[in-house]
Image 1 (cartoon, rainbow, N blue to C red):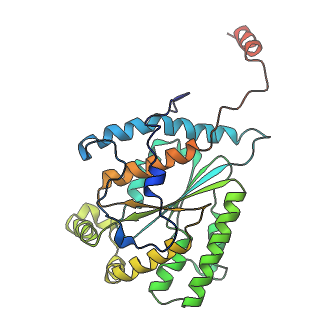
Image 2: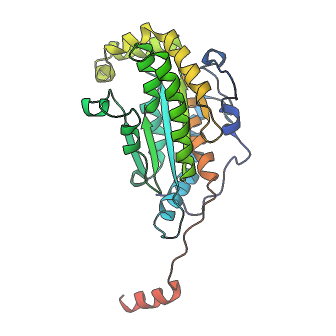
Length: 293
């Protein structure tokens, strides 16, 4: 349950600035996938404690967002967390560990797979727009519209003119989202070549992990460098003031989960939400309730 009036913890920490991609040309190869920027503890051994520190305030702020949407005069507000990254980068882990700290009633999760025939018959943003969070909700995209400038590009399904045009469409789409009250938090989970190998091998060596493995993952790995190039360019071209990118080092699972939770916390803090004021007298209602004891 949410903790009422939770006080900010580590309010001086600003991971938003530390992990934000700078303006201009960007290359994922310049980011250490084992980095731990901003982490206030010693390492993995105290990571659970630092996640527990985030929990009460994050839960409190998520409930405030949800409560605000139940007030007629409140402006529409929502947050969309976009999780992108290569196979094994840990999108599912982030959803379990970081998003798992908030009330599931306030979360709308959408995992984007290969488009269906119906989806292919529409513009690429059609299926994305259908899955946007409603007011008061935290929306989670496990993969997103960025697949349409990554997988489609690397696999040769679209040409340069098409992906160039899609960058502009994405920027316009995300600007419209921001203008309508949706904060867009875009996280690239940055996993290394070596760590990806270890995680894929672990899935194959452990029968309990076979359900997580897809032979198609090897096709992606064969084009690892091409995906890095495509992702670097997509990040550079869609890294706007209203919807900036954050690159989260993902080789250390404990850091990845903490960093996304901390980014989510900082973005919810920026909403500066209080609790809605009831349109009734609490004292009078208590008196009436007492009569029904």
